[in-house]
Image 1: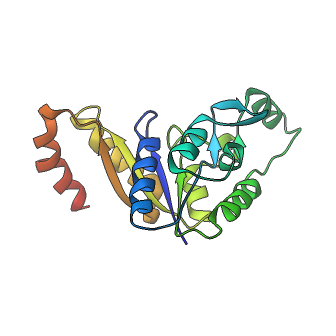
Image 2: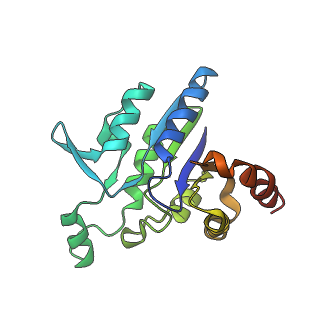
Length: 194
């Protein structure tokens, strides 16, 4: 079983859409696909459980049998943050992520993991993306949202620096038509050479 961790350097880059597109493609190829969002900062109440809304949506679209709260093992609520900051509660959340990962991975060909809003998330609870991806031996795909000519390079190089050897590729998302030639003729060759 392989796992692919889809992350980004900024929020609303299209990580969920990439998870859905890859999941549907892998399923069309006959592969058994699963999904997990190890850490969520957006609590959502469903059927009396706290879960992640993206996880609920992915469950439906990909036809997964697991419940949304099983697909989002650590959902950081404001109350949970306060407990974490006062050292009065659970302090190591990785075993919870690891157990959810092992359960979700059973019988699969590929498990898609969705990162949080950015590569900065997760440090306060000991679940930063680089550490989680490394510990779970996941390959990493970064979704870079095009914002301008300079940021496309800075975002990509910052991701490469933070993720190191685990980085397997990037997807540049939301590229306006007027800069498509800049991205395809200058940015992509630059990244491929590095």
